[in-house]
Structures are given as structure tokens and as C-alpha cells.
Length: 345
Image 1 (cartoon, helix red, strand yellow):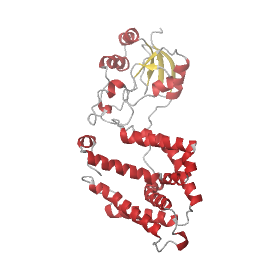
Image 2 (image 1 turned 90 degrees about the horizontal axis):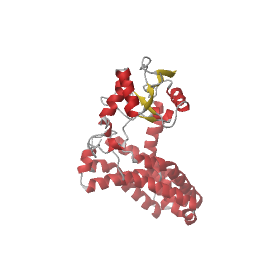
Image 3 (image 1 turned 60 degrees about the vertical axis):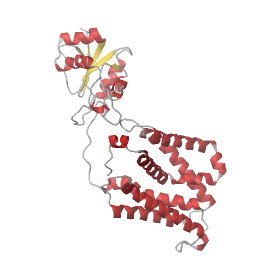
Image 4 (image 1 turned 180 degrees about the horizontal axis):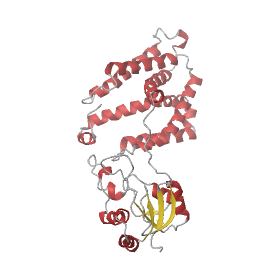
């Protein structure tokens, strides 16, 4: 694949970035080709519901193209717009079907799918790409062929299309061709994975008893209470702590002294754009983290008292069997999770 990491992209001149943006938009056009049918009937384009769908879709695509994030989270804008663009695309295809008919479209879908498969077979699925042109080449070939095919259809000079269907709309041909281009990817992402052997068993991210313990704490504590926990890192086996850990605060609906810090402003503000990943950064307040972890790693009456006195902590939520029985009052235990009340004795 392309040897362009985030740093290389940040230092690249404008024209490669514009080229990559164009490729991205062409791929989106393949997925939602039916949108080309929306302008075919002005009444559909003026419909408030359709305008809403198109507006949401434009916002999603614009968010991906114009914004950035250390972990590519701008793509969530597009994910949120997908259902609405799909509805608009289906509506556009329905309009074309009623107005122009899809009798000849099957030939163009087959041609588009065949061209995409041929390009993949000739260039290889894992072709090493150095620079922009080799990456653009497959898309360029497909676009040129699509333009030629649409012009041929308009002139009525394609032999394998019946004479009575050669007068079909250019929009019908474009929609059918782009639909064909999208088919190989759809099959790879949808049908392909389900036809392979059994995948590796998933890693359990949330331990047994987490929901029950979190809900018990929610029901037996005040919204102003502060909770300490030894759960900071997701169990993914990385060399650094993957601090996207939030289920303690989510299940308990309580403030946590230190849990996951990946998306905190104190973390993002220290992450270098296109440089150091925010996942590689430690917690911003190391004194607070040390005081928090000391209760679980070296439990003592002094360490517990410090959390209560200096940070206002009232509860401790432990994961993976960490025990504070000698220095706090056990209130609830479920699976691998325990809830202690500090200073209750």
C-alpha cells in the first residue's frame, strides 16, 4: 500500500492531497451512485425530506474531507451520514427506474464489475505503491472507460445493448457503472469474511460482573461521590497503555478520579499533530495517578486516608480481583469486580 504515513502526508505538497481527496470522493460516488438520479426529477430534489437527507450527507462528507483528528475520528461524521445517503441513493435509483427504465442497466453493472475485477487482477490486491500516480492509475482507467461507455450509450453505438434501449439516460448508465465498480468491494467486505474459516476468539474487554457492580454503585451512592479504580487500560496487550477505558464511569454514572484519559483535553493538547499518538501519552497528573494506584498496588490505611482526605474519594471500584478487604468495607462483589466504601469503618 502507500508508503505515506501521517507525517509524510502532513509534509506533502498540495497536489497529492488533492488527488487523494478526488479518489476518496470517486469511491464515495461509487457507493452512493443512485444520488445521480435525484436531479432527474425536480420535484424529488425540492422535496424537504430529500433536501434533509442530502444535507446530512453533505455534512458527513465535508466533515471527513475538511477535518482531521489524531485517530481519524472525523470518519464518524461519515458513518453517521451513511444511512441517510443510502436512503437518498435508493430514492434516486427509484426515480431513474420509473422515468427511464433499467432494461440496459444490467449490462453496465456487469461491465463496471468486470472492469474493477480486471484492474484488481492486473495490478494485484497488495501492489506496492510509491507515489500518487500508481495509486490513481486503477481509478483513472475506470473513470476513462466509464466516460467512454456513457458517450457510446448516448450515441447508441453499443452493439450488445438492444436498439430500443439505446436511448436510455446517461444518468442510468453512470449509476449502473458506478454500482458495478462498488460490487467487488461489497463482496470482499460482506460475503468474503463470512466465507473464511473461524476467526480468532475476541478479547473480552469488559470483565464479568462489571455491569452488575457498576449498577449497584450507581444505586447506592450520591451523584456527587467520587470513585477510585485500578482500571485504566484496555486488555489489548500493547506495549503502552491503551487508556480508552471508560466502562467504570459509564456503568456507575459517577465521577472517577482516574480512569481512561485517552480523549481528555489534557491528553489531546499534548498530542503532536501527525506525530506522537495520544494513546502513547501518560496521564497528565502523575501525582494524582500515583496516589490513586498506590491504594490498589500497596494498600494501606495511610494510602486510603490520603485519597479520602486530599481527593474526596468515597468509593473504590476494583477490577480483576484486587482486594482492599483489610483497609476498606466491601459493599458488593460480582465476578471479577468489587465495590468498597472508603472511610466507612
